[in-house]
Length: 64
Image (cartoon, rainbow, N blue to C red; front, side, top):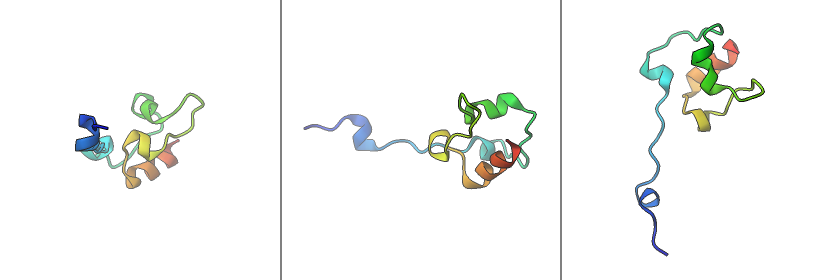
């Protein structure tokens, strides 16, 4: 069976949005920034889904 183009190239690795913006602190009051990282129930989404690095995932955990 022939592979599709995405299977041949592999998936593009997500880049941490907090590393790109050089954030040194994540504020719990900045809801628009936190919204993509929270699910419907207010739980933090996994790093695999959001593309956040380990350092900023820990900061996100303390902010929530």
